[in-house]
Image (cartoon, rainbow, N blue to C red; front, side, top):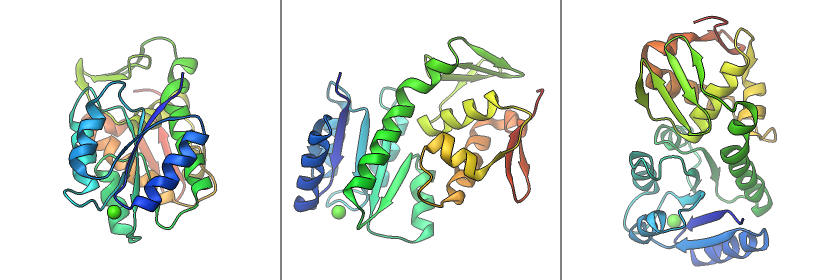
Amino acid sequence: MNRTVLIVEDEADLLKALVFNLRKGNYAVRQAMNGQQALREVLRAPRPDLVILDLQLPDMTGLEICRRIRADPTTRSMAVLILTARGEEIDRLIGFEMGADDYMVKPFSIRELLMRVQALLRRTTQSYAETSPQVIRFGLLRIDPDAFRVWINDEEIQLTSMEFKLLITLLERRGRLQTRDVLLNDVWGIDSYVRSRTVDVHIKRLREKLGQVGEYIETIHGMGYRLRSAP
Ligand code: CA
């Protein structure tokens, strides 16, 4: 079955190029040119599997749209790829704080974008179910990989798809150091771009959401991260 990609972009030429190339890549493509359209398309069946989201739109910011996608339980697990014309680090971090899974700075190559889309969709479908068919328990933590659900002390918490994948990866390799490069490669699936700060930002957010369980994730200074071998 074709995966559905929603493109939210107000630059007509770029939108056209993205639609053309994603259709060629066999995705079911939908499009929106402003925030209102985008929010309607996000909720319309079949729900998009991935949203390519420009940050600067005429009626609202992409960050606001991203925040709403993450706030709604029925859209929360959608992959979100941010497009931004602004290259400053601070904006990138804000993008991740808002729950985006990845971002690209304009101008970007369409080929690179297609690779990122493919990587994002690959990890939101297969990986969890393939590697861990049952409920995982680790100390106060309980994870149902198939249902994409996480509980701490029997209280459910909401993670984005990337945070979820990061947690599962650390858990599967508990007791072993995972360098930023290894995590970038295995969780994000992209090794062409050095963005080790991305890992730090996601770990920080994951720890915050995990509360006391966040202590299970240890920082190995200057190297990377490790989940304790025992809770
Ligand atoms: Ca724009």
